Length: 205
Ligand code: MLT
Image (cartoon, helix red, strand yellow):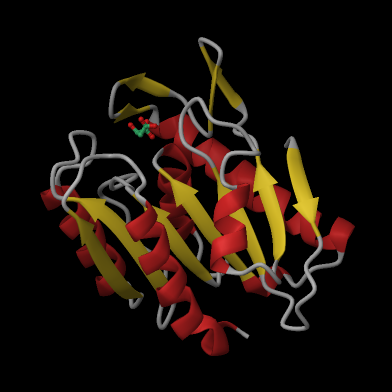
């Protein structure tokens, strides 16, 4: 997968996996990594799907209606890519923390829904429930931050709460942060995510 890798300066060897929203690129979320942890490794990936010129991480059948077969396929592809990137760049595969927005948060959520060990933690900005009817793997103790909007037309508040419940039932330690806005990523949400990350960092080491 097309990507940017920036080696960090931190002995903890955490890697932030940046996953952009629909129509974004692997450059979009680089400023977030600087806010969340300027010392971590950064692996920022471009989605494999081209939807009328807009990059995404998996196909959709319509707005908010996912192509579930493709979502499953692309989730596996991304997980394999992480295995390979860890070998190529020499980072610790067990210390990858996803930072995703919208479509990128949805594939990060799908990684959590499919694998117990794909991610060490996740910051999900405006995620949806990626798939329903799955038995989730054991996510005991895995820290997850969900940033949600009370007026988000793409992900209504009930869906944010549903995702929180599904992940919590699988054992994840979920923090649900609300903003009184829509689907956009606000600076206060980024700040809340970075404070959450700072509080988790010792556990992620
Ligand atoms: C998706 O397709 O992943 C969601 O609808 C969010 C987005 O618009 O990208």
